[in-house]
Length: 237
Ligand SMILES: *Cc1c(COP(=O)(O)O)cnc(C)c1O
Image 1 (cartoon, rainbow, N blue to C red):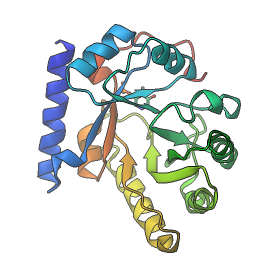
Image 2: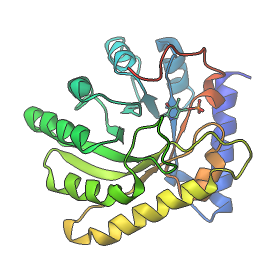
Image 3: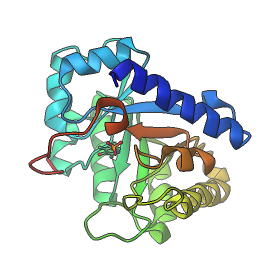
């Protein structure tokens, strides 16, 4: 199937999952995870109705920005980000999904301050405690949210997770529900800081309908749109 058909099919499934959960389909953003895709594929996706692209790697982000590949769409950063590379990302993307440590949070805030802007961010939460993945432990996410609220330069918009790969439908539902509860708890705790978390970034090609059932507002979908990816040399920069 072609890109256009894939986008239409995924969007229809998202809309159906939203309605089944009593939600308004317009609350759910379909972010196209564009890693390994070239500028032509990105432009084609935007032509076919994609409104948000998500990049994993600083190098690909920089190249695609230079090529003007995102014309007409927003770009978000969703990959592992090293502190020494924040200068290539802050102020160039609408939202950074993958803020995974206090150190990175402070570095993003400092760079935003230098540029005189406010960077929208999400905190990445490592729900399953996987050693191979970045992110705050669920117990330390509230402290990270308080830190974000204190720092100028960043606006905390919500939470993000990358649970283990789902084998069967429903496998990741408990993780998604956990992230949602965590977001609700943090928001409740931080009312005095007027933190308004309205983004839950969860759900990928294998589990996006479960994520929507659990309250996702942004699913990050790659292979279900673009087809299988060639193996990457590394998942990190
Ligand atoms: C690659 C990637 C996705 C999309 O993965 P698919 O399984 O291809 O849909 C989503 N989120 C992040 C952070 C990714 O790196």
